[in-house]
Image (cartoon, rainbow, N blue to C red; front, top):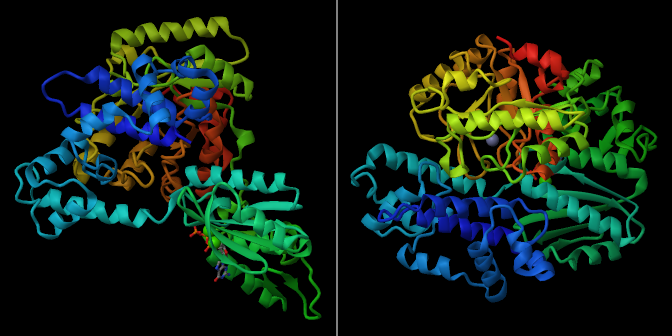
Length: 575
Ligand code: DGT
Ligand code: CA
Ligand code: CA
Ligand code: ZN
């Protein structure tokens, strides 16, 4: 499993190269960033690729040339990377963790090293405690308090893992269990089943008549680092990825009740149990029992709710946000689901930082039943992502026309992910914007502006009349970067007034807007676009994260623009 290590090293190499003031390293930096991105999103491990196909296999990867393949090979064969080690001698700084702090990029981290010899998170913590940062020119008291706050957020998030990392691991364990031949039913429960954006630990339920063997099997899995706790029906293990996992073995007759109980959340459960008590029943993880202690709820979860006079709701809703009451009244809303989605309005190609061509992306979308996609490559300010200027964009838009001529059965829409500049203006000329079917805009730079200034920047862009979708509106990266500081009420009001659609970006590290902000935005009658932000064809599969995030925000299909057929969608965008 080399991918995350190699990608991490490449990212850090790019960080370090970008500090070199003597030379213009833009292209080298770009090459390493691109390679890091390609490798971190690969399905197959680079170690396996190299073993199977050698250097040639590595060089086939998009954005990976000879030099970079050489570095990958060196790392696989020796566990070291000379390029990285040489740079590290010049910059002995823990960029990887330091730059996870909000407001601290590699340049500022380097200055902290030059001025105060800060190399690590612990060094920074000490310097903050001694108030040494505020004395630094260019930092000051405000930076100091921002860094302190960023440090707190980082420490809080350390204990919870992003859903995008936890869910694939849970699915892998489920598949291992299914393949063991020891279990009959297996289900993911807990916050992972509710698709909460971060997960404290994994919860897995199985039914089996071989308790001991199941627990033995789990403790010996390759993914498991050690056993924390073992009882007759439950085992808790530490996983190598840095997460804990509870596996419970239950009887088939209790499976429904156990699934209901261990899906949670706790507040939801408390309310459901109160309803049971009112009816004279007892509800726990073993079943729903009447006064004669007969178990009324069978092996399926729905029967628990039914016997209580309730309608079952999607796990994403079970957060005690009013779903229990509505369910009792049989008034649950019909939430958006994967089947409602007709198109994907945030897609990158190799014309900026994506891995595939326009035609490849369109064909892959057609294969999974999309009726249309919108190509949204980056504009020139995003030069690290290969963003295009007006001239290149015009040519690119013509290539979309060409692709539309060539392909049947899917419509490719002309768009861009336009950078909202510092002053709220857009990064392309009006006449280029006029050539597009719709325009998606987002913020990528100057993320640390003050609240008022940031709010005005975003509102100004929306009021320009040239923005149809505001992409990943808060710009947070889960566990890495906080949301930008802006007045969401004003932004959502402006979105409603200017008929700007708000994106629910389903790319797992983003999930932006998140559930709470979606609920707030619905209060302003906002419309949403649930997108994947795909950078390669396999990313289309990430739509499920966007859908679940939308469900957690109680989004109904009528609020989703990419659930519309193409002609209606185009009317939505014609202002
Ligand atoms: P997490 O792990 O922090 O991301 O969140 P959950 O929801 O997965 O919580 P976890 O793993 O502690 O427990 C799994 C489920 O078990 C939880 O969602 C509801 C249920 N549960 C746990 N403790 C209690 C409790 O004290 N009372 C009730 N009614 N249910 C509980
Ligand atoms: Ca859990
Ligand atoms: Ca748990
Ligand atoms: Zn994008």
